[in-house]
Amino acid sequence: MRDQLIEKLEAGRIQRGYYASSPGDMHGGFKVVGPKSVALMIMSSGTGEMCEGWEHVSVSCTYRTPNWDEMCWVKRAFWRDDEVVMQLHPVETDYVNHHPYCLHLWRPLNATIPLPPAEFVGPKE
Image (cartoon, rainbow, N blue to C red; front, side):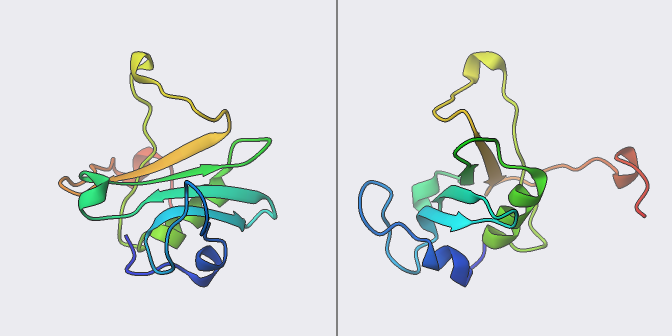
């Protein structure tokens, strides 16, 4: 995870209530307008002991699921370009759904995420 948040996230930090955090914290809730001019609600676990080995950020919109551009924007806002993060599809018996339009980004701190060869996705052009 980055060492500090971008200005847009700091400006949208929730500072009162259940999702509140202090300026400079990597964890907390953030309400910002994303790259598609749609309001995003973002929750970050931060890093360190409190995240129990997983960096995690959830992203939700009010009336639809976040799209690819929005998820990429959030990835870049929280993680460096050289860090790999992932979305997971667990077995259905482990599903947890507290919001119908929410997606999650994960990064394990004690493992390297394996990646398939880029050509399996398609040509890089």
